[in-house]
Length: 394
Image 1 (cartoon, rainbow, N blue to C red):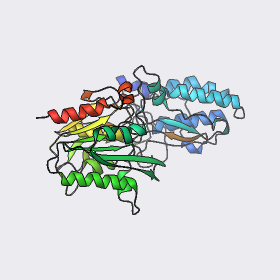
Image 2: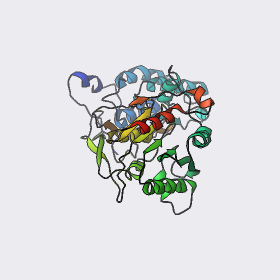
Image 3: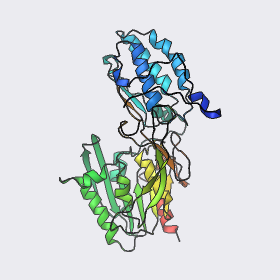
Image 4: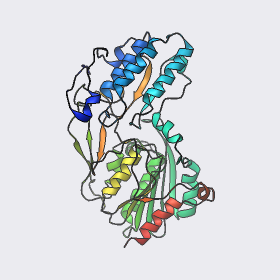
């Protein structure tokens, strides 16, 4: 992708983002800056963000002010100095702390920063909020919850080659014909269609068999609490089996050019039904929490569109922007000589209500807060609220 420096003339609220100044650098692809000094390192990063970042029209960060403020600071740093590498880390942390993209993080190639934590602005913000909640543990999801609330079930763990981490899955049934499914991440379709046997495939098959065989389903609980997201195709793979028609759930758009505010039109985004799907009319309840991210947010947003859909739990993380190669979208992640990866969304996602929830998270229709004392006692108030809702729907 070839970048061009584009001046966009506009009025009122867009004007702070569109100024063309002679003191800004000529645009170049971020990876083509040599990176022999911090001037080049800063320019590569600033230009990459200027052109690739998808959220400039809703982000409150003044990117031109960032250039004017931090360019002189980076110019005073020595590339050979470990101490100055630490200063650069601090500068990048401050520059990015207000970004709305909650997928966003930075990893480094610098040998001086190899032991440094990635810069992840949304995590820094979350860990410092008064309403911070703990992450639900593997032990609770795999053992305590099913042991207390389910009559039959199957659990399994499989390593995802695509995402390079384990995916845990659990499916179960209650005697009141409420079906339950939990996963810790999304790569379900790939694992299910794998030619090799794996535990997650077995769990999915168990759940799908119960979905088809249970004629009098009273309700379905899909649990994506503390789920970090993953493959977008899993939305259709999982929910497309439960609906008999397509549903409009939102819109996406990308960058149409190299200018900061060059955007494509909004494109409708649908939940598609699968051939042979069972139209579930019983309540479908999603459990999600403050640690539900990305696809684990799109899923409750999608379920809420369904006439029988409900979302119980807490406001989600706020990272809805889909990810993909920037060669396809003129936006998204990139690398430089200094950064292994600038990880940022490729598309902007707008919900069917025409609101953008990036950076603020999606709210539940029934809020049930995390309760550490109840968890310690082996109870799960959020799960109990889901069962109560299903049992009281008329």
